[in-house]
Amino acid sequence: MVAEKMKPYLKNNSAIRMMFEEGNRLKALYGPENVFDFSLGNPSVPAPDSVRKAIIDLVNETEPTVIHGYMSNAGFEDVRQTIAESLNRRFGTAFSAKNLIMTVGAASGLNVILKTVLNPGEEVIVFAPYFLEYGAYVRNYDGVLVEVSPDTETFQPNLEELAGKINKNTRAVIVNTPHNPTGVVYSEETIRRLAAILEEKQKEYNSVIYLISDEPYRELAYDGVEVPYLTKYYNNTVVGYSYSKSLSLPGERIGYLVIPDEVDGAEDVISAATIANRISGAVNAPSLIQKVIARCVDEQTDVAAYDRNRKALYEGLTSLGFTCVKPEGAFYLFVKSPVPNEKEFIEAGKKYNILMVPGSSFACPGYVRLAYCVSYDTIIHSLPQFKKLAEEFF
Image (cartoon, rainbow, N blue to C red; front, side, top):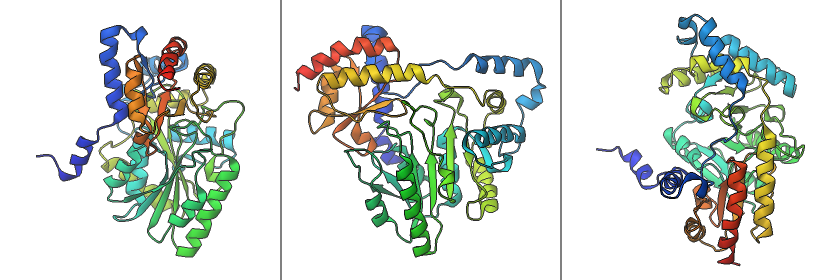
């Protein structure tokens, strides 16, 4: 028997993954070069050579019981210190090893912090559109997900609605910038206003409200856009980070949490999160790849390749009559469907071997997400197919 808690997930399996599997089916039929799969945020830019070299050097140079053995559940202290110092150089922060917990990617990190701070029945607020698995993470700990509706003009967070939805049961707000699925970067003004609202509401309800910043796309920003580092604006901020996108290592499942000293009861929160990391089943982040990250911590992301794709796809689609907010970061376009039910549009796209993800999978129907972390050739060769698709609707 399947547990009752799991039955809804069986009915609502990830549309992103289902589209990815459809892509594999079509590629087997028509050849990979004739299928334009924009479904999954799987980086096409290879990991830097320094990552491969670090793996080889560590395996050859290091005692196996060190690189393959247990360590503190928070991760190797030297790795955490190295990352902390890198963050301090880049953002003017003052972290040390104790402020970091190495996690099995950002998803595990979000689960760890939610397990640490969330009581059953307490609420976590998210801004639509959002990565739908946030809801699953919150329900893992019997919390309640509260959605703030999207501002479809800018896709900046709707702060007026946020203020109205915070109450005595609110425990956390999750933000994601650069943003999946829109590619929007939350401006400094937005962050300052958000922080002010949270400060005011903490005083009103005499409570602690955590701002959880989910940051797997932090390094992917274009046209000189700055991505504010949120711990500098609001004391009760916790940062979840992943190297999946910045170093093209999604399968290695490596990331971290930052819990600053300024967080209310920081010492207890850090200790509890370290325990949560262990008892979640992960025990600790993978040992070898932790050491690899320490050697590659300041490696630069190849933003130029994604930027080239961004410009080609955005300009190509808008010239055909499609509309979307021009992305400032990440590697997604969130395109308005030419018909209200975007799933009809997606089905029409399949006739031309174009695979897109419905906006309803991000709590924002009427849109589709295109992940442009594909080859440049895929972008260019897809445009004639998009032209055929556009002719059906415009």
